[in-house]
Image: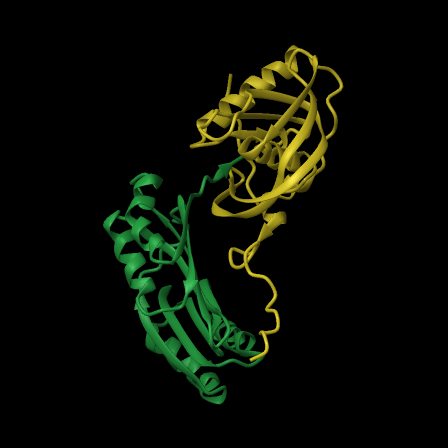
Length: 172
Length: 170
């Protein structure tokens, strides 16, 4: 079995996941891990698909469904590594009045600490007149939480609210 | 002493409700020793419950080391444990020796009161909070046939996003 990464983007409407996954199932595709979410009115899919054929075969099987639903489709060959999840040990929550550069500034400082982002999600809330930006990051870092807080401290003073918390995973 | 085999999901036995212990005797203490050895053999495990090794009796062990912000009782053998009070709630990440390679967020009570027999059949009462309270709730769930998978909450938005209120008038 070969793994492909399927990317699908299009105007949100009910039934996209059902149609795409049914198509893959009918053609012998196996679903791996996925992230699917609505972003600004677009539905987005990032989906690992395993199939006996290569990524071009996967693209060919999905093309008719995506055309019918007016979705953009992109398929890449990938190496699929399941059963190998790093466990995040830090969570960073950032929020403030939306302005250019928040993500670049925060993540540049996090990269200095060697932090590896495993999961980042962000939303623009508030109103059109006064948008607010909210971002959650989970990742792994070998530096201390205090060091992560320290590299972000000056941004905190610039009016971005930043919270850095350890994630202690209970294994029971 | 012996390492015991850990049942892993989706083994249906993990959904079985365990029976109260009738007698705290040498045979039970020998089992507790094996259970503890099995817990300590796993990486990072702070608790284990008897049904995880296929013994459906109400026995659990927790051992949460004291940490900076949170006191704890250290090693506890809990026989026929009962939670007597709950207070507050907190979200935290959990994993389980019975659910390899998956961790997720679970809401638990922040503080609990607990009664249990120890391994010498002495009835004890505990007040605990934070990580230790979470560990006990996780293990006691096993005695009732629940896994943390039964209590997962979405990683996105929980305890953070509220409903969108109507924007103020222009």
